[in-house]
Image (cartoon, rainbow, N blue to C red; front, side):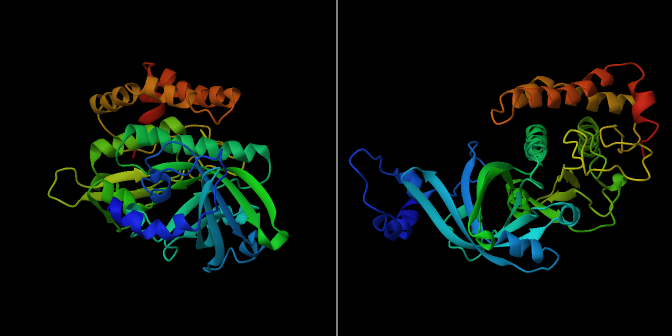
Length: 350
């Protein structure tokens, strides 16, 4: 397979400009594996997208793709450019965002990465508005994905992106910001040797109890009450390709409405009886105290790893990391109290 990648990229390598005496040539790996293991590498991806943001804003309610050029900057001497297409996404954020979230369609871009052979589009999460606060929302939501990724293999991988957008609709005006891309569902499903269930008629009682309880307590910890098994709202449902007793496995995603992100546009559901998304609300199934305690202990076993994950995240200011951790640690303190189940869990279980 490596030999194949070398041959198909030979023309690209030959066409590169000559390097100066002091320049480092791109490594063999750089030239053939720019997008290989896209979601396994931890370092941020350095991307430039060139398209008309003005036109994207005008057509955000249409299912139309716009032409774009995507450049991946591997190092100072090497970059790879592909023609792609972009389209706005996200029903709520289309209404509230100055800069819509968008898909990048790579189907006919000619990207040579085995993992991406069957991938049609990549989901991009970027800053919604120009305020600096919205940059923190992006980084916070990325960290929520990372936490669930730590807790479960049934999760979406993500990759942080240093994204430059060149707006051809505004005289090539440039904007550089943090963003992240989310592993396509097909890749996540294949990685777990699973199939995706498309039925909207499932309920809490029909999914794997242990994993549903874990999702429910994780969601409570991060202040996520915007999900539902029925209708698959902000949950994907998996089942093993082979015979297995695991049954249906819930996979949470889209965390911009959770209390840990605390976006100014996020509002709790009308039927919850809470005033803010930062006010936790348990939406899991009713279980025995023994079962609840088991799940609480499972989540408690990751407390130090979650803290280390946040503290080691070098792209967020220290004050933001401490504020982020304060919310998580408030859950752990609460879960250790005797009245926790009676006051916070059983009154709203389903």
